[in-house]
Image 1 (spheres, helix red, strand yellow):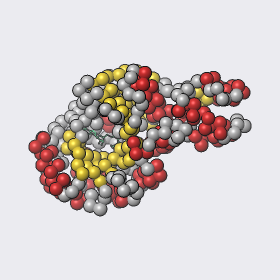
Image 2: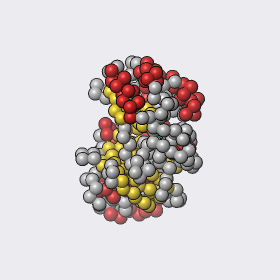
Image 3: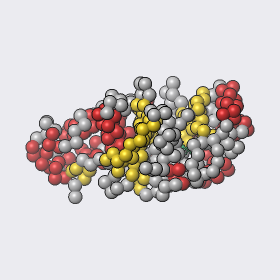
Image 4: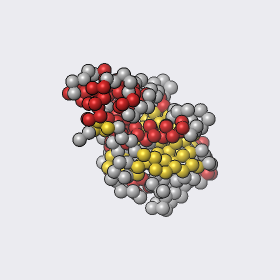
Length: 345
Ligand code: SAH
């Protein structure tokens, strides 16, 4: 059976080509054609000899998920894409356009096993499977092509792994994607323009971030073990204490910091005492705090914090010299806002 070449890392492709009696450098050439020159047909690769083209056509395919539906939100100039996998599952990705930036939010799973109570991806979708590398990088390829063809952007400039799924639970395929994104023979994106968002799983977080030097956002959300476990069941297995320990292992450049994501839910975690607790657990870490007013979903009947309370929270954190921002969610109108990824067509 032929293999989807987009599922292979460059080193895997090198090994594969070796077993077909081909030299390693052919893998670099192929990467260049596929990712840099955007050619997805072996026969169009002009510096590939005919006998290799025959081998490639026999052993490999190049298959991408297809764009199935697009919804534009005029309010914030974001585009929600639904893509279809070969086996007919839906993938959701959001393109957010600003003056100088085109940010793509990628999904890494079909459904999510974490089941955070406030998040539609886990509570309203069953976890089906991890996405393959070809399906993660495929979102990028298809949406970048669409954006260019429709003159929405010259190219995608920033990537956030903040769509459906937990990147650290699909690390192998997320890693392949990150490699292709930053590789000079791939898309050549700067590592500073890639952000991975995670709840923190096992002890592979610092190792991974340090290896690639990409940016990290952490879904911390609740400042005590009890609260975090109540709303984020993963905390019972991988505790806040563990997470904070792990964050201390992250190597940061001078100007960098870790983003702490903090959802603001009315009367649940938005009291001044929560803010105090939060800064006490973050002491010694170089962070900026991103407050995300809760985007209501049907299965979790709570409310976002009120503006007045958000301001009290913000001012307190600022008074303690923390960098704070409030995320006014993109894609609200098209139900593509954080935690509302539930594949509504
Ligand atoms: N599993 C990863 C990737 C998802 S990122 C993670 O948890 O980090 C999506 C971000 O939106 C996370 O910070 C998530 O906690 C947050 N989020 C989820 N549901 C939300 C909601 N209803 N309102 C606001 N933010 C939400």
